[in-house]
Image 1 (tube, rainbow, N blue to C red):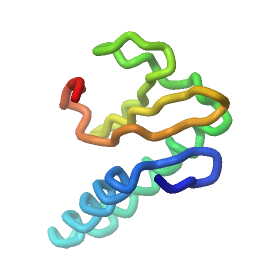
Image 2 (image 1 turned 180 degrees about the vertical axis):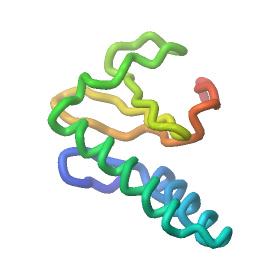
Image 3 (image 1 turned 180 degrees about the horizontal axis):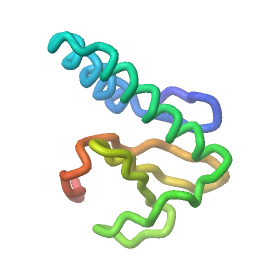
Length: 99
C-alpha cells in the first residue's frame, strides 16, 4: 500500500486505473483515459477534506465503508482513525462481494 497525500491506495487499484488509461490509449483515445484518471484522482483527493462525503456501501451497511460513484467507476474506501484508505476502484455496475 502506498500513501498518496492524505489517503492510501492499494497497488492493485493503481494498476487497475493505469490499465484503463492504457486500454483507452490502445483504442487511440488517450485524452479520454487521461481525463478519467484525473477525475478519479480529484474525487479521491477530495476525501482528505471531506471523508464523509461518500455514501455508506449499501451491500454492507457499515458506516466506515463508503463509496463515491463517478461513472463509470465506483470508488470504495474505508474511513477510520482519521485516514482514508481506497479499498477498490471498479466499474460502477459491479456489485461488491465478501471475499
